[in-house]
Structure formats: structure tokens, C-alpha cells
Image (cartoon, rainbow, N blue to C red):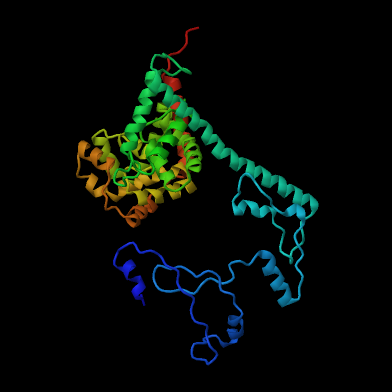
Length: 409
């Protein structure tokens, strides 16, 4: 039950937390002794500072001041065993970089029931550990380097616009890129109100996108990137989000789309249409009758990895499988969406289909969508996605070769 002292908390006010007094010692008359075997132990307990709790009373924490040495001595006294300290070489001392516990496990000794590490194995593990820590340190350092470059450029853009060319890219183009980043950030998940100006993640998103434009000036910023970076920010620390963002955009499919490599994009579209016709022939012919090509709806889906078109929680589920299965699942998801709304799309014309597929209904459920995705067969005759994609690339190359004018001797 909540006592009178907790009334402020229940009424919605901001109560001041007060220390809860220690409970009365439990007597030996038996009425309150639920665990009689521990009665003697309870008498010898030295109570430390009282505990804290917003609702109800709790007993104070016991023996907060015990050190590992005291605990070890008590254990030895009870069991009669003497614990040997680990070898000095296996102790981890003050590191500049604090590694993850799972990373540091490589330095731990094996349990006593297993053979001990040999000297060679211990040295190898130390070397592997040092390499893992060095790689982990590089990641935030890499982000800081490109972020500082981005900040310098932002500063120079605000101070001068007289330079005609810097590193092969005009100042006008760079300023346009920065303006596009600002504009895109304001339109990134507007319903969340966390990426817009004044929101807690506005500056983080701006920093990651700016750092990436310095990291990959050959790609720069492309509209839609902000949605990918925003999803990563919601799940990772800032530096890790930047590394994941850069690695994700370096995948062949994403790189082809964000660099606007028309020939590669056409190959992806052609491969998609092979499976579109295989799985949804009626809808495929309906789209063909309106000359509705995949680029009209697929580009937006691929650019944002469905995070703009699908509800955020559902888009994150698509990401999970995409990270496991690769680019094939992105196109399989697209076919699953078309299958889910096939009956509706068959009743629409070109304009309404394009509008519908740009922003899908909010009431779409993961169960229905993933059921439709599972029903899609990513196999044409005996060929899988990668084989069909390779075949399409070969056909396109041969077509380009045959259509080129013959050289005169």
C-alpha cells in the first residue's frame, strides 16, 4: 500500500524524495520470521545508508561498502578454500579506451575445469584484443575527423562565397548541398518532432550527413539519405551511426542509386520486373498498359529503405531482414507491397497508382505485409535473384555492343 508520505507522488506533484527509515529488527518470537534459519545472520547485519523508493518503503541495502577483497576473505572463511589471484599479465589496467565487456572476454582465463591457456595462446589473444580495441578507437576518430572538416567548410561557406572551385566542386554546388541537407532534415519524420530544428537529434543528424559529404564527396548528399541516417541515430550512438551509415551506403545497390548510376539502376529495374511478371502477372500487365515503370515507385523505396513510405516500426522490421538477407529482400519487399494492394491497384490509373505507392496507408500491419512478402517466389525457372541479375547484366551489355556502330576498317 502507498502510505501518506507518498500522497504527493500519487497526486501528480513533484515530491521530494526522503530517506526511508530502516525497519524494526525482526524478533525471534516467530510471527514475522519467514526465514527462521537466517535469524542469526540478520542480527549481525550492519545497515548502511537507507534505501530510496518513490512508492512504498524498502529496506536499506546491505553491505554496500564491501570490497572484492572482503568478499573473497568471507568466501575463503566459509569454504576453507584459498583463491589464487590471476596472473599479473592477465589483469586489465587503466585503458584510454574502455572496451566492451564481450570484447574484453578474450583476455579472461578459462574456468578451472578446462585446460589453462598456453603462453602462445595468451599472447595471441592479447594481440587480437589490442587489434580489436585499435579498430574500435578508429571509428569515433574517423567520424571526428570528417565532422571537423564539415564544420570548417560550413564556416568557410558562411564567411565567403567568392571561391569558384574547391577540390573540383563549385562553392555554389556545395552550398546547394548544405541547403538541401537543412531542408531534408526538417522533413525527416516530422511526426516525431525530434529531428526538426530545436529537437534533440537535429544537430546529430546534421553532423552525420555533413560528415558523410566530406567522407564521400564523390557521392555527396542525395535526397532521402536523411531518413536512413535518422533510423540509425535512433538505434546507435552518434559515431557508430555514422560508420553504419557509410557502410550501408557503400553496398552495391545503394551506391548505384545514390550515385545515380543509370546503367546499374536499369539492371536492377529489369531484374525486378522479371520477378514482378513471375509473381503478379495480372498487375504487371496493368502497369504495362499505363507505361508505369518501376523507377516511378522503386527509387523512393530504395533511397529511404522504406523508412519514408512505411510506418517506422514496420520499416525497421524490413531493415532487420535486409541486413540479414541483403539487397534481394528490398526488392522482395517491394513485390510484397504490390501483392498486398494488388486488388486496389488494379482499379487505379497511372496518377493514382503513383500517388498511392509514394505514401502507403498508415494502417498497414506487419503480419499482412510479411505474409505477402513470404508468398513472393524469388526464383525464375531455376534461377535465383543473383543469377537473374547477372543474366540481365549480360543481356544489356550484349545489347549495347550490338547497337554500337561498327568501326570502319
